[in-house]
Length: 126
Image (cartoon, rainbow, N blue to C red; front, side, top):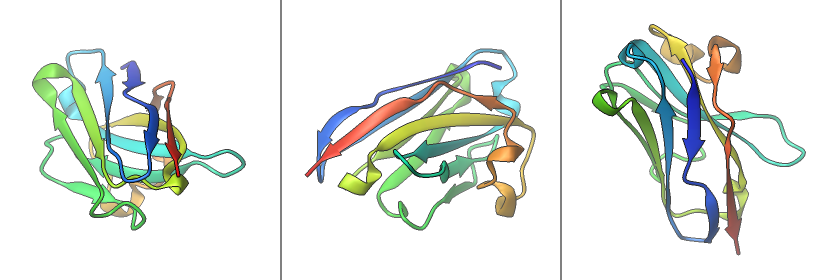
């Protein structure tokens, strides 16, 4: 599966963006998808994940209540709605996919994902 992330941009603190991850392939509905981000000089970190059905979602503590992940398997897309943005949310956001299910505790592990998109930059100005 090939992934393409989009929707990034420059936004003021407190603002919102909707990031999208478009996937190729007819079996996208069988993939668990995660969003990660990497800020300059920092390691890549898990942001949110969603199982292949869309029924289960997981979030990093730092984004709970502000970010929402969702998917539309009929359109092969996974979205990340990012609200109440803070300057510390500035990063390149990547979507990633793994075939089948991932245990909830393993979702934050980048090594569990086999497919990665190219990333989309989100810059939050104060």
